[in-house]
Length: 612
Image (cartoon, rainbow, N blue to C red):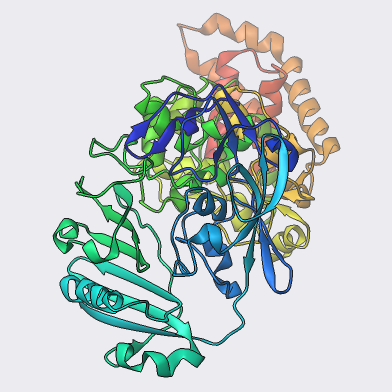
């Protein structure tokens, strides 16, 4: 696994890409050592990086929790634990970097408030953290009733209150935290209810509050540092947009957040941002896209996420990380609302898959076959036959654009007679809605238009949903890789997609399961064969005469055309439009009509039937 994503140690700092990345799944992966990476947004340089970001989980042991180190603190907020850190940070990262957090008090920093299982030089130990690689963290629960109070004033007023609190000794709070947003600051304190009488003079102007926790937000610059509590200069934080201070008598640990670079007269942690330009096109390195990205699953490599893509751009590394199918799942979870898909499209080099067939039977309502669905022609005919039984005439056309153009939203042109497009896959609905011609009212996904009777047959089963299907039906929405493989021609891991039936016929073929089309009445093969035989007999039986009438071409073209028209009219008489479409497709597949005039007349008569 390449280490592109771990060459970023903050939003403004890049280091050498590690030579090796180990995906940690258990203690056995720690025995040979390495540099731990508990979070995406901060880290340290190392040639052998141990990726803990997926090593998550919480086990309730009664009086305490056993937490895997990649678990974010936000997953513990409902457990009433004695200590926790910033919601966005991982438990292991907070212990490793000795982060402050709720419970950072006179009894010790977080390393003295929790115990760990860890590995140093291939040997395991349990107890307070003394270095090495953390395999689990034990956090005690809080069983005493805890009271929470807060004071809201200007930052200058609140920071002076902090100095006053600690100038005469150690106030018996369990926790003291300052939170500043702009010029307004809040001082939060907590303490066991039994200590209330001891603190009455210190909380008399405070109001009741509730449990509190803090996020790092979506700022461009993040600074982590420490200062002496009684030496805080409020002017040093005047330009900070958001500030979190975890306070003890001897020291304060702070997190300063801003969208512009800042300077401090205090020492900063090495994983703080520098004051150089942020590097990753607005990406804040949160990693949320990694967990939803089908391209990551397809390649079994996190570098193929948008996170890896943005970091590779900063490295000026032209990679194929952008060659996905633009499903947009990443944008749905991006906390800073980046236009990720547009960025990917600009760099992607998708496969140039073109149409291998051409059909032009337009009507007001028509199924459109694209490079995505060209293997689904039989399914299209089945849908046309079924909708005909409902009194809906559907035409059938192919859209002769390369797959890469379709995926990137290039405008398409179709017959002006078409007002409504019907598609077989949710993927096609997604892309054609972006590029539909002005004459088209809407693009409909066939499954959404089925009567309740048929839809319920599908919904009663274990469903596989496409990456692109936006309905709230329950089902497995893991990617089948069917479209991804078409888009990038890359190797695929085994898909995690599963189900008894899929709402995407393309995925159904890939997964070897049924699709929603399979609940429709099948096209009767005997009827199809009869149509083909009748048409074949009609054409072959009159082939010599048609050739003979070619003698009149240039003299009186109408003689041949009139005969062919009467011939075709005798065939289409009393046949429904769906059967005619079926006959035309089968005739084209089997090259039954070689004479161009005959083919043109046949096509025109079917179009007339669809339009009537």
